[in-house]
Image 1 (cartoon, rainbow, N blue to C red):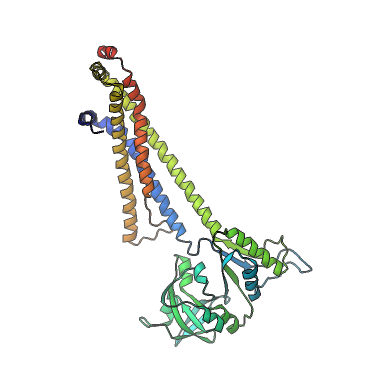
Image 2 (cartoon, rainbow, N blue to C red):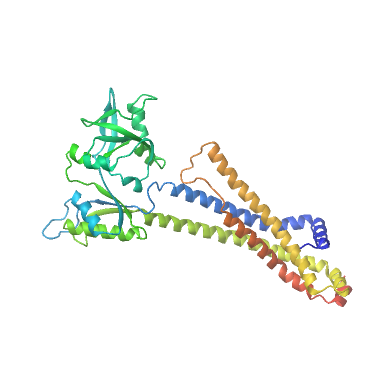
Length: 416
């Protein structure tokens, strides 16, 4: 690799056949360029969709519906109501549950007022553990705490839309009292919701209060709307989902075969499905790009065969003067690796630059492309591409180099 004469010969050969070399190298360039671009776009899609998972990636949600199977003398069609006793039962009998956050809500939206201003907002009764499941950024103040739950305090944590509608610009809501359905609650915190689109709109106009306070104040004694659950470390979410639903079915006299009595959402399963989808997209990108690269490598190999044919007499002279077969092979291999490496690295730089430019423009102009965000090129991909280039370049020159090494000096000198 440090033989100056070889580099000079390679440069002379490439310079003599610039168009042929460029057209041959374009296949390799395009293959690497498409690989980087497709994988970068795939990462953008992955980031865009996973950003919508604004809850814990292993969260489980369980709620009740109407039964569909008669059981133990009870008719189908009855509605199952969750209670505070279910909370204690799950905590005691399902050790696979790491975090349990019961939640309740007032049906629909209710008019909330402050002074002369009023509007309709969502009101949700929750526990402090909710932040492990549905993380919120507390911008000012605090969230509901354990003392609020135990003492059934009338405190509220409001979203940005609530603040915007009820309070004057620049007014600090902390410590102020808002009227929720005839009861006054002191604002103790404000939050910034995660997510985007409809989710963030809905979250921004939500008011969180202690669940025990909601039960007592709004005539929902011993009533739970749904459970938000995080499995214990190392426990699959599916296991927790099945065990909690089985326990609730037993406690509320629901047939084990009744699949409609309890609804659930397994975020971990959905997230794995999404990851599997993008693994497939990544694999498809590699297959398409490698196919293009192989086509380019074959072109390089063909060109090197032509080079060997053109330089048959020169190779014969080299061997007649004592050149070893390896010196001949290394010359051809080096030229092949140089062509493929330069073409591939150019494609790598061009593809990475284009992906970076797209990312920059999206951030600079605050473009919201829905399911597409923050495209990027994984450094591992770049490293693998470089290794692939060297290997492919060596393979492309292997057959021509072997042919060159077998040239008979006498026959080569007679070649016209």
